Image (cartoon, rainbow, N blue to C red; front, side):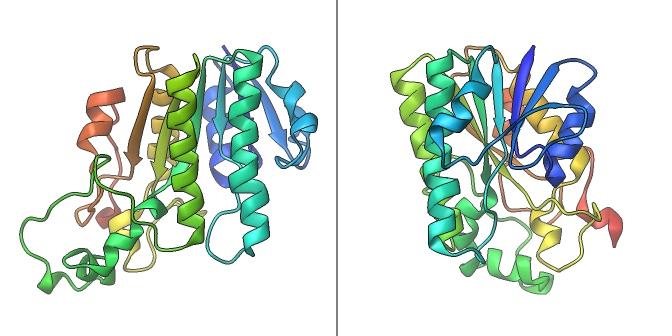
Amino acid sequence: MKILVTGMSGLIGTALRERLEPRAELSALNRSDVPGIHTTRADLSDFDAIRPAFDGIDTVVHLAAKAGENFPFNELLQTNVAGTRHVYEAARQAGCRRVVFASSGATVSGWETDEPYRSMVAGDYDNVPSEWQMIDHTMPPRPAGVYGSTKVWGEALGRFYADTTDLSVLCIRLGYVNAPDRPGRPRDYSVWCSKRDIVNMLELSVDAPDTLHYDILFANSNNRWGYRDLLHSKEAVGFEPQDAAEAYR
């Protein structure tokens, strides 16, 4: 299998490379060279520059993005909005089988303004009931900022490409993955995802059958205070997280 990874030099891309390299022919679309990997150096905003990277590729794992709310809108527009459209269109033109789109839990983090999620992410567990409604892929997106809104756009555009072309699109709503690979802040105990779990989810998405033409899947570790549904991810691709935030308390 030939797999193109955008943003391979990042935290998740580096971990994914370690998992996939023994079993696939990898290439990278990156702003800097990735040592040991054939790399197309280009900015996602430049369609003509990135287009050749997709030729001969089976599956694209689109990780590259401006992540978080600290970027000016123009940077989010060029990378997350225009850049994501360029990835889908380049994959379509090249006849790729699938795009695995790194969406984000930020698409639903606005729910954290409501109870009981508000108390959960604050670590105020005395105010959390014994059971709560899980936020699943069928519920309306509720981004808490512009960054999360750009990921909603990526999901919606992926739906359009899946509906109108042969391209399969799986949107993975990533949990919070960090370099220490352990939770730190109170909110992490709800939304954290280990490197092992996120890489497993991405690999399962790459390998999912062609009959799974479009879907939205949450990827978090098995956190006691998690509010994002993982049952659908298990049913769709067999995702069963191995780690849990509370193991680090």
